[in-house]
Length: 169
Image 1 (cartoon, rainbow, N blue to C red):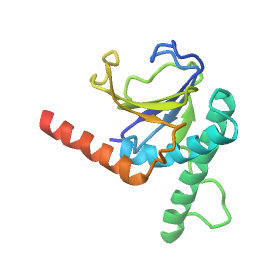
Image 2 (spheres, helix red, strand yellow):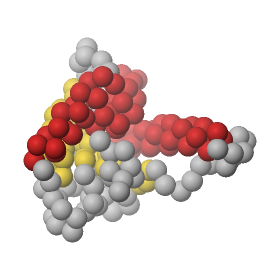
Image 3 (cartoon, rainbow, N blue to C red):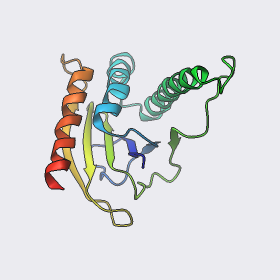
């Protein structure tokens, strides 16, 4: 089964985690070790160029960025297997989406909360499918500081979390 996740944008600091302003859906590879390398460099760039206080543009441009990356990977894999001609720019109907009611899905495992202060907090949903979500925060990445996010940091966070899951089993 895919590791589903949400990337949520919050306009106000006091907004409850369950009530994002804008909500994006990622169908698979939702672990921090996969999502953070995809979103943090873009969000750091967007914060420096325009600011994350403009959530509508930030979410729209992030979605475009993620879909472009997804399409490039799927097209390369498919081309290697002779399934999609190289000139076809579309690679399928799964990958990413927009949640029109901003309601968190019951089957997500991770939530990445993007705020204008500018931070990304990473949350894990400990609830079983069909239960009300129970989020616990795993960590926060400050996007405004001099610290530049690296894929190694994401890999470390993902590995720590995966070991935690194994220990709880």
